Image (cartoon, rainbow, N blue to C red):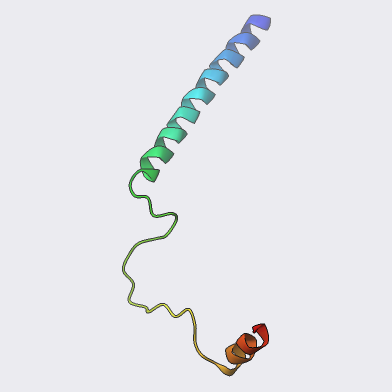
Length: 65
């Protein structure tokens, strides 16, 4: 009985190690394709608007000074 448990644990440990190596290799391959610090680079038809001058923003900036 102990031999079958030991065999199972040994096989499970080997399978886990192989799976871990596979996951690490896949992530390393994906990360090395381009270092953009998490910024997605692509083309978009939309123009990005980060600030639109409104009365609310003017009041906010006046109170911050």
